[in-house]
Length: 512
Image 1 (tube, rainbow, N blue to C red):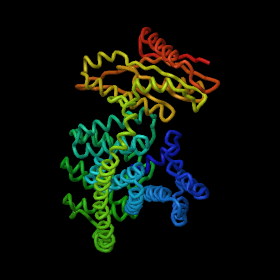
Image 2 (cartoon, one colour):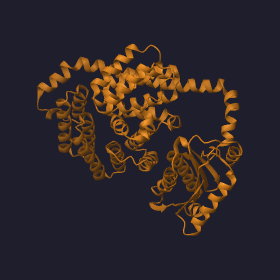
Image 3 (cartoon, one colour):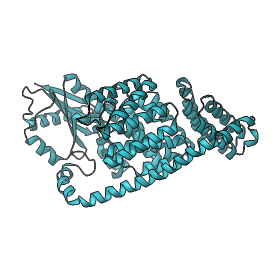
């Protein structure tokens, strides 16, 4: 599923930062950088042969940067995955993982594990995929948005698959909230969302609904002509109909999966389908004995070698993940005094519940000389309407969960140019830098809108939560923030006027 998401998101500005060589070292050869970005451009237009040729050439010539090699191996894996060469893609991710572990680069290590898990899901190693995801620390990739969304989506799917409904619901809600807030309405997220919803309904016995979402994906995949995804989806349908004791339908879907894998000469998936037929007791219904001979005899040695290599790599990955976690613990223990000393300021700066910056940090932040990196700055005071009712009706745990969720969404919206503060109780303050007046107005509206897409549920009842906002944009000529307390007071008053006039409103002013 990640290859779809990759190609879809590379064309959006929101995810472009991911794909602009974000892990280049500063002293990396400029010629290599240009070639690398050219390879990326070729990937965007789906010229995978040209892109692969450039990347393989760079891999041979590069003698300077290990980080560069890691990115190349990951990109080669993505191309191979898109070409349905799953084993070779898997091996490239393993090479990238080896180098990432040597570099102790947490972000790249996480990317490798997530890409490896994608392959494992497709090849029906779902236990191993879930094991890897359960060992990952999502906080380490929370700023790596593309991979964060993939991880959240797959964790939802896998937990539903293994009937961990509560965790599936948690990750599902998080996934769909992020997709909605970032307006990621494209085929990539439609596919992943449909897989999640299908498995969700299947896990609670609503099989008709599950079939509906699998069929929706087959329609999308037919338009995209994605062979391996179609085989995967037909196998899922065959498994479901076998569970429902509809043997005839199960056979039909297995035959379709086999025909597609045979047409596209995907050896692994051909054998996977035949093994599934045998597992389901349909071996007598396989009409063409020549196919069995070709697949299970002529290709048997090659397949066994690849399978053995893959199993060895899966074991090795688990061992590396365990060793990596142990190493992390040892390193943490060795550096505990240093970490404690350096992190005290950060700990004191963050609100324990929401992880937003706290009021004390805000006071220190505004009392220092603070110069803007952009032309303008907008202060946004936010109050959750009728928050006391949330606590009274749903309970304080739901209230706390709402505060955490809202704080997380605010951070996703403002990104690197904004800071989110918990001002007190159910009030938040955002300080956001930007270049035009339109940006200030837009970010204020987006903050209010992102929360309107979120509902709180309890006992199947829906509770809609709204916000009142007071915002002030400043445009200082010397790029220095003056009279910050006066600005905050003005924001507070504007917010108060909005609440007084009916709540769920934005009040906005500009100060030159």
